[in-house]
Length: 335
Image (cartoon, rainbow, N blue to C red; front, side):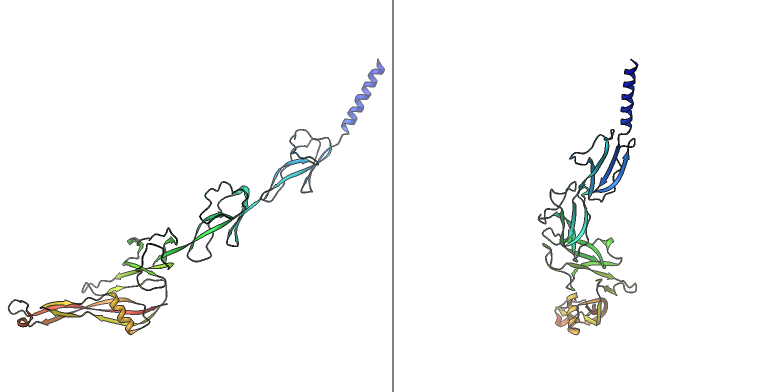
């Protein structure tokens, strides 16, 4: 009986000795490069290695295995190699023409924002997937289109309107063009009134149709400023052109109202801005505009031949008085 016990004891001792000598070592590699080692008693899923944004760690697999290792509570016996299983994530690129504007991992797909147009008088409409038409803009940014890794910016021309040199409105230069209207009183500098829009290639108020986008891409507000002289109440009516351009002062020009007597009645001929501009061009052929127009009034006394005029006047009253105006302004050449 003693012999049997001794043999059993020897067997258990050998088994325990052999067990205690068994190797438990896990070596980890990332892209073929050594990462770390875990000995017996320190086994567990290792910390994730640092990877670029376009690469994601999916897990670890034992060398030679096609499946991810999941039993992190039991360390494999022996010296075992683990390799990081990494997934490469495609990048989405956004272009304005041939210039790269932004890029991001497919898993972080989102609106990259609005690029600055490279051409004046154009605006950000949106982004389209490569191969799509310009009217197929991206509206769903939850995920990229399948198999699409490039998006292009879609731009459209604009017609821009400026007040006192500041951008007031920008309207798309396409079939959806609409006339923006006129600036509100609070948007105009104090003491000025809005007369109309002057196109960038002209110097008169635009009189074309607003049913579709005009050829000109910029318009400036033509503003009127009135300065009332307390002495007479009507003098010094001033017209000013507030365009964001340089001007050459050519010289003064004056136009006087004419009058005539018809059947004993005084008829004063009116003067319009076109008359003043025509007079300026006669004096200065290069004149584009007349500004700072001052109005002066002159009282005229006229004696009427009551007997031959055919008009009826109270006895002794054959003299009438009336006012005619003269307009003096500065002719300019707009550069």
